[in-house]
Image 1 (cartoon, rainbow, N blue to C red):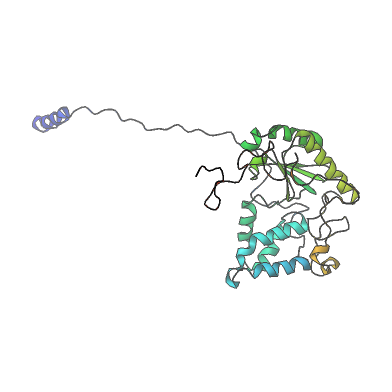
Image 2: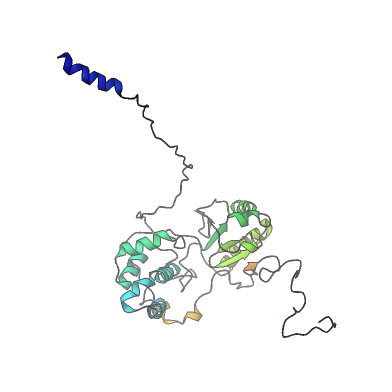
Length: 303
């Protein structure tokens, strides 16, 4: 019995002591969760649910026919983005009914349209005001001019709403966005399709007052449908091909509310400091004279 135990004990004692196992771990860090009112999924509401009918009006159906000519018939689903944009301009926002109609026109699964509409922030899946004020707060706008913080404060103070909200009269929707690509003329905002640049708090408030006065002068109500067609309130149309509005030419449509009608003077889109584009305010600092080249000979004798 001892002969069986001793060899086993010897083998155990002869083994070198092993180092204790080291538990592997790594630290994890996370940023605070920022709550957002925007959902990536659809929730039915009284103004946005599949039971609300939507069809493209006659004008937009002509535009759709022109758009689809750009794509081979088997790839017409590639036109999903321009058709969603047309629907948004007609109705005022990209509702679930607009998405379903686009899916029907392009003969594609509705889910594929939902995936596009929820990915790109250019599609407003909830109703927005007549004027969608999108203020850029990326680094160049934070540092350029007076800084985007002061522009944000001016907008919030004048409209009485914060980013992500719409005024009670549904005239303005205020949003904070990332870079809009006009960094050289910072700070800037985008209102509907137009850029307003080189802003100060004073010019920003002047612009908002002018837009409000223009809408009131043209009889346009806040929250009226999109930027295309015409409704009784003065802008937009949710009627389809059978509506009377579809008979008129594209160029005869009601212009946007800030077109300057009825004597209302509006600031022109672009820089608000007198610049035409993004030239140096102090004048040219380079190329002040014709450069020398093979096509021009020097006349000072220093050849």
